[in-house]
Image 1: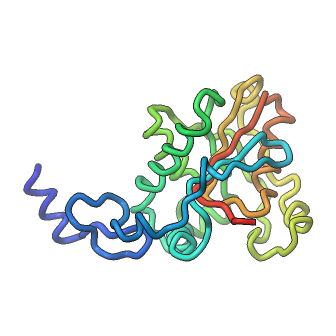
Image 2: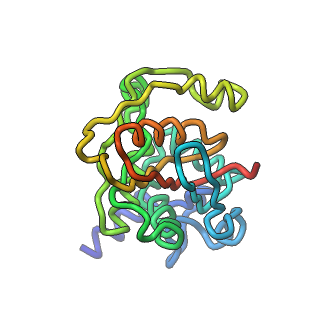
Amino acid sequence: MGFFSEMLDLLYPQRCAFCRKVLKKGEHGMCKKCETKISRTRAGGSQSGDFFSCCVSPLYYENEVRDALLRFKFNDATVHAKFFGSLLAECVSENLKGRYDIITWVPLSRTRLKKRGYDQAMLLAMSAALKLDDVAVELLKKHTDVPAQSGVGSAEKRRANISGVYEVTDEELVRGRRILLIDDIITSGATLSECAKTLKYCGAEEVVCCTLARSRE
């Protein structure tokens, strides 16, 4: 087994999720240089929003982190899902322990999923849940495809763009539960708020969130 692992490492060397340099022995997920360079939040950079109690994120969405997430989201860099999930799991353990009963994610529409080929938030949620010795469950469905939030404009326009596009897949799983909602990035918070609203309207007791990165403002 060790021989084949070594061969795979030679043929397909693991690279830093942020700078893409080949990792040295003992490095996992990111190189030592990026470990000291990337911008981390303090105490999860907690923020609140409409319908969700708080959202924590281990990283700031800028520079190498922004580039890495764009590759992960749009360029099939799914190999980093396990590492990103470990960052999420660590942030959840440090800031949200005991505050949720079930883990889910912000889903893509069927149209977007077919085009992209994978749901990056689902990969993050499943990877994080595995690290937390838990499972992630599909609780939401995006029934309407709308323009990407990043290109819509103001926070008000983002809220309008995403309004009413989600539905709960199983109300019995939601009712009375405290839910941990996972996504890749939080900027205005409009998407998380809309998902949280949908969950709470179906009886969720509380919604807390964790994203891999957040904007500074």
